[in-house]
Each structure stands twice: as structure tokens, then as C-alpha cells.
Image (cartoon, rainbow, N blue to C red; front, side):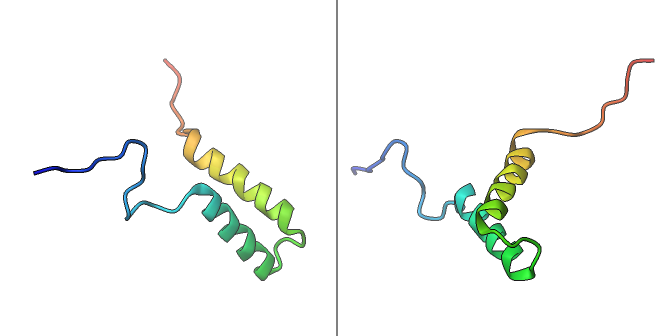
Length: 64
């Protein structure tokens, strides 16, 4: 039996992209009145997503 496999292709049930979430967050900020400029809200959403996914702010105590 032959099974097709495509490299670098997303599964049909993949999570939405970070761009999708940045747009959703910006739309929500505009709707709630938290921001007045969509472009600014979008950039701020990207800053938040970048920090959330790429950095670990867990406190690690110093050596005693």
C-alpha cells in the first residue's frame, strides 16, 4: 500500500498561525475600546505573542 507524505505541510487539524491570533487579539482590543488604532493593537499583540512563546520568565533563585 502506498502512503503519500508531504514534507513541510501542515496537518489538516493544525493550530491557527500566530498571525491569526495577533489579528484576533487586535480586533478584540479595538472592539473593547482598549486601543483606537488597529495597527498599534496588532503590533502590541505580536509583542505579547513573541514574549509568550519565545521567552521563559520563570524566576530561578540565586545560588546561596
